[in-house]
Amino acid sequence: MYCNILQQEGQSHLSRGNRANSTPGDFFDCVLDSWKAFHHIHEMSMPQGQENRGQERTNQGIRGRGREKASRAIIMAGIADRMGYTTIQIRLDPMIEGSKYVHTNLIAQDWRSLANFYQKLFGCIPVPPERDLQGEKLEAGAGLPGAHLRGIHLRLPGHGESGPTLEIFSYIPSAERMPAAVNRPGFAHIAFQVADVPAARKDVLAAGGQAVGEIVTIQIADGRKVTWCYVTDPEGNILELQAWDG
Image 1 (cartoon, rainbow, N blue to C red):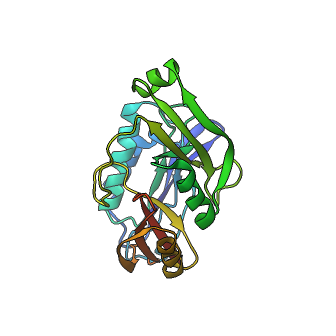
Image 2 (image 1 turned 90 degrees about the vertical axis):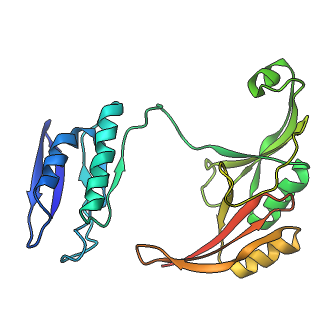
């Protein structure tokens, strides 16, 4: 069974297709109740076990706004999952207009040395100018009296000239460092896709990093396999190295 939420000449309607052994029609009652929440629905596949499993449908939805409408869409996605749909991805309008991921910050003991590590091993590219900031505005923004930071942005590989950066700063004063842990709540690691995980791991260790666990290969729900491991950079920040098969 599949459904398409279409918009034609300002008239929105719900079209429905049926196959043998399809899921109960009450699913579509939920759809009808919440369809206005959608901006786009992507990759709605057939229920598990039916013909053409994994067949994708791309559907154009209606722009939805507000917390209530967004909540209805999320609830509907959960219902679809419980009723056996293999894939349903929903993209809603962001509540914060103009949002875009731009960088991850990494506080270093020696920002220049750590930046060299990421440039040499992963091909990160410096994005000038280098930062050297202090004064009242930095203190106010950081909430840190006497703050002084120095560092640089590095363009991460694989995303072009406008892609996100790794922001490596050293702060004065510097807080005491907590030991890194893969399961500590909060930001835990950054990941790089590589061609050869064992070779990349060897290079990281040779450059002053440390091993965290072993190299493993796991299979995820869609059948693809990923080989990965955790390592640290020379200052103890955790990295994931990964390579996908299929």
